[in-house]
Length: 162
Ligand code: NI
Image (cartoon, rainbow, N blue to C red; front, side):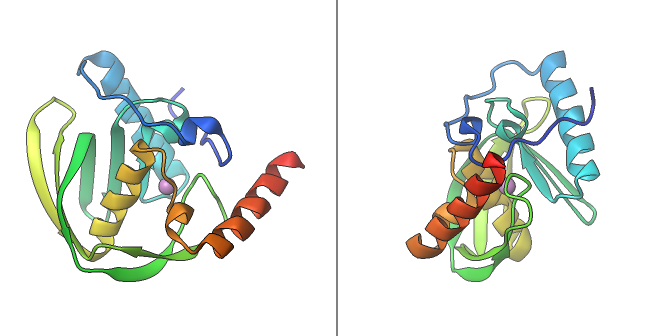
């Protein structure tokens, strides 16, 4: 089942801290395959494993010619600030301006378990922070003003009730 269903807020799977990956075997490889298929099908930039109901610290980001696999990522440096509109496949149709660092350095493992370090600016820095937030159970609207957040959450919850 390559394309997986995307979990949407307020699904509780989006709110926990995901667990470290320790096994780089077939299960992880097929999870990654599914994640790439899913993010492409939904025309997203990035996807974190909790968004398809898998509680692991895994995320993928595909933008232009870049394809980044993040396993157990850690933000080791960040600086600056940029405010841009952001959305999320787990809150479809909603966009808000979110402040993010302008530059980040992330250390992670790749799909084979090899450590790497990547330094990104601008849009990709934002995408990295957004996906790593997912692994901590944070969504982009946790980083907007409380009033806007309340409004947005209410709209999202209402949609699910229908
Ligand atoms: Ni997202």
